Length: 148
Image (cartoon, rainbow, N blue to C red; front, top):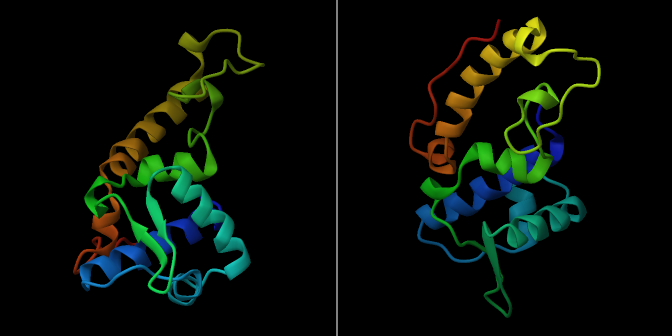
């Protein structure tokens, strides 16, 4: 599951992307909090992380606030998940960036857990890596999914 922090980060970026699409300017932290439903105090820390990661910029002054500095189609949801929450692999031996051998594994080549979760994770990666912020804010959005 993604963390609440990541949900707030995505919602904040969606609010900024919507503002860009409407031809607007910078949004204050209060405006982002109102539009995203994120608590202002928590959002301040998230916006600082997003700024340090190069997703948003900040402007000072009367018309100040936060703005997207990347286009929505350049913001990968997979990268954003990793940036905010860290590795997204279900097992440490499947992580591309934070690989660690599982402590209780004697042979990765024959590990049935690794093979099964690897197949599931690969399918997940194909989807999540293909999504961008633009996909989330586009007219019509993503196709509906049935939840089982």
